[in-house]
Image 1: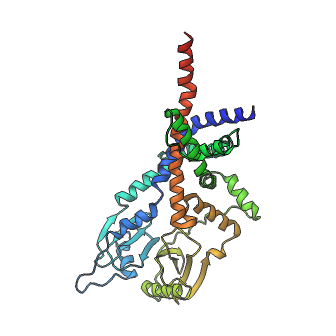
Image 2: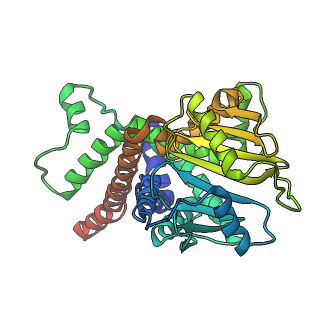
Image 3: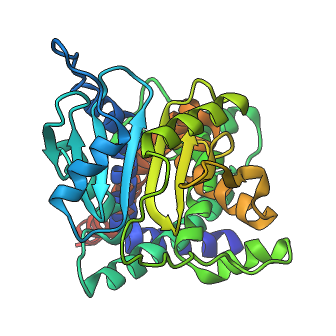
Length: 377
């Protein structure tokens, strides 16, 4: 009776949230290598200097931004440690891609690839809804994700055959070369995909609850006796103060600091202007933003160039580190490119689980009852 209850609960819940789970899974597959693809997209625009051209300085890049946005006091510049690489820069929320030598604006806003990923992310998080409807979309994906977690757990229970002999187990985790009909084939697929995707899919789906529910965050931080971290409000500066040192001189000091801290081969360095009065913030990253353990934030005084503060991963609270691990487990990035690949593959497996699950449900709820009614006439 218990197995029967679990079975019907699994079936009904799967029908109710299957479409949303399918959308989140498909978009999850498409987002698997988002950062690498965006990095490649920008790298395509590498340019070599013409005669007498020199790479722009940080001050020159900032001047270009300020000319376009004279009243803005919050800017980002991302330097990539590669010759000729175009410079992504932001004035407030407006993004530009600037030629490293000519200062030409190569892009305003995102590229078509960046916009595509933005749309995919919107569907992944809130089913493409906007404005006031976004909260509705977020609620639907949140509870669908929670019910998907139930489907994974109940599916693991139902996967176990009543007869625990090797022949019965084998048929549940290996694809059959020949199936008598489509129902048998999809039944086999549903079990095989469920078996091989079980553990990583459970990790991906369970860590997604961190983005949806306050009670999950409170529980996680509560393990370490902490309260969930709140995003600090950035003070809006009336103007962007100029220090005694040029911003490019501060950039050189930041590179020296990185070299002394085993990050001589940094990949990207974010410069944030207007974060703290009288200071310039650097975020020095050896990767593309998918491993905060090795990156760190450096604050330099704009007058003296002295280190105002350093914020490393080891300085974070235990609860903050645990949350970050969960966040990168969701995308697989915690284990690097291999982890991303696994996360993408189990998202693909989830698509097959939904598809085969709908087919099997339709057969049980519609096709078989219809055949029985026809045969009884």
